[in-house]
Length: 344
Ligand code: SF4
Image (cartoon, rainbow, N blue to C red; front, side, top):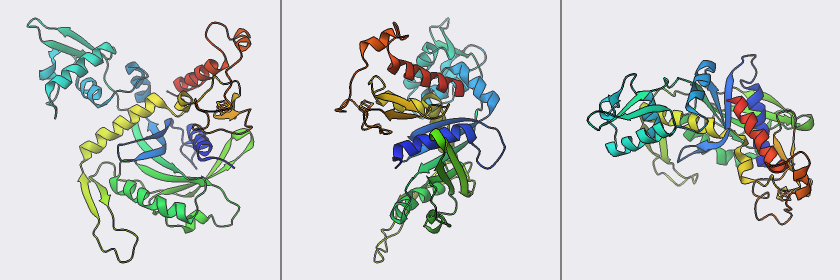
């Protein structure tokens, strides 16, 4: 039985190789997991990128640019200028902008100097590119029964109303039923449905069971704050607020920047690849952790400092081709980090 974590990695791995589904179209994509906003976190995110823009984004380094840094790098002038003249008036005090200018300069993404009158001046090094084309949100529900679908419906309705992602999908496990049960459930018609089945050595086959509608990311969104309960006697009104387009655009870019930094392989940061039982199982993309001691694909929660079966890598392993820089655990981390780099 596939765990939700394992299923999630399966979907990420598939999306990295095969997005967009059901087409021959080739896209540059960044795939990330467990990202979103303060109010909503998605299981899998696919950022469709402009290839040239993505290449140009690399100038700014592998770490994300947060919204303060984006404010600076996107508005940095071509010629030296005092930062208060060069940058648009912020909605917060200027001292935070000054701090962001220093941070940006320390990271090498802009140039900074002290002008003749002692003022901080800045100049751009590169144009910040338009690299994000579309954002796709996927909710993973391997076992989508009627009650899971009922729970999912309000979340998907919220996503559709807000229109922060261009498309919203549900990924679920393929079943042998002639008509997939998920299609009979109460999923909003705007959400697409992916049916995932497992092939050999962890490779996944995915079919599109329902195409999503493209959401209006350039329009005003609606954030649902409260909805009436499912009780038939509950006649309370739905509470909502509007969300302006600027907020949405800013959030989208911030989400894409975080996805750029983290990718989907960062799960290893919270696991124990330095355990002697830790292995990576899967096809050439090397996706899923496997525990030899438990003979299973372990979850992040199981594979933690508290795991009673943890055993450190024997020191001898470190002398078998793993000198100086640590044992296989570190090598696995390096390998995944190299894969992350290649995707970028
Ligand atoms: S024994 Fe525990 S710590 Fe070691 S790989 Fe298995 S789950 Fe992870």
